Length: 426
Image (cartoon, rainbow, N blue to C red; front, side):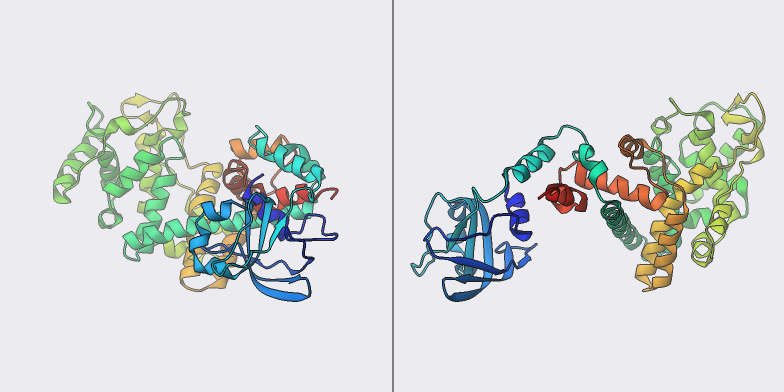
């Protein structure tokens, strides 16, 4: 038994209310449960109960044991003198207000169905990472879809807050904020950290000064990545190094460690060298990329913006000085583009919509998420084991948020799915 579960029981009145009586013996009638208080103070406010023949309006406090009242220091807090009812699982102590009057107390032990208690205990003690997996086939699809929509919105809002913080660091420069976000996600998990370090060490304002010359952008990016410090032999690599040495002094740059980049267990097309070459193309090809995203009407227009090819050298190489078996364009794949749209484009467009108070932009961002295919990752595959298969990226984002925020923390009482399971056959 936990206080959170007691809150849930009280909130939805999941106990036998026949012949309710206080510990003192007085008759109790619950007229209004009240509203949960998420801040400091009593657990429910604006409640209404009838004790004997008298109606009382005010706050309700909930504890496992009545003695927890004193353990939590409520006897020294005047705001708790206005509590009209103390709801406990176990009454182990008679309590009094500062004026000497007894605090009306209701004991719930013995009034809650064993089936409900057992089901809650099973959820909390379940060792599976999705505690409710064995009940999912009993859940109304409408409840599941509503919860996924809620989780998707929650995840989008969480990303929006991070973007707002980043925007503050760049003094409201949306283009620089986009550059940093894209830099982070161009690392595609394995190289997220070094890519983020790369873009942080090389501000967009410097890249912009050289945007008309792809070779100079590549020199800046590969140089800052620490990849021009190794022994180089090709004319292309030596040319990059010469350009970088000059620009490094001009812009007072300091490269990151080359050892930060990871190649192990990556397909050659995902090597950081190829990603950097594609990233260079992005900023060479597009001026005012952020505005282009805002102005785009259809998601296909955005996909087209990210269809990037590498420069000639990288069509025949995966690393400096290492020839590929065959020559190919090595363009950014569609699944990678979709990942960037899900994790960068949609969140920043949504955030800009909030910032500019444009419901139209916010709606467009969410519609794009619904038009994008579901992600394929470990979490989505795990849900698939229980026949929960997302139909689009909006669903998969919801499932990721549900798993990481609720399932992993056994936060079933704040989840519509968990709540509906507890109510099954009640």
